[in-house]
Image (cartoon, rainbow, N blue to C red; front, side, top):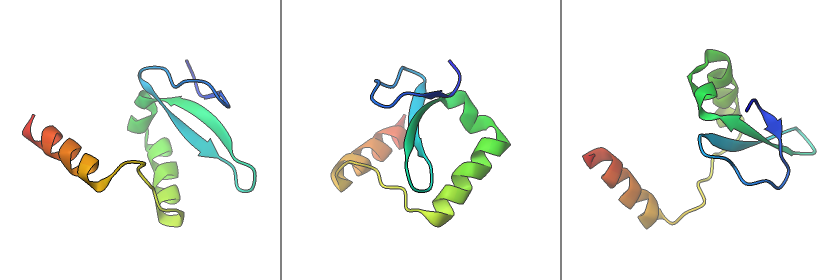
Length: 72
């Protein structure tokens, strides 16, 4: 599956959702493999500089996750 505009669809395994647009946001489903590409990494870096990435979980959940990832 390539990048696809899927407004309300479930994100398939191996993909993640991103929202694109300056005024009206559209949701796209993107393969994880795109994270390896310098051009896509550049877009993410630009977004990080302009916007704050918010992870929708508690601090405790994030700490637990990162501890589990670190120890594995």
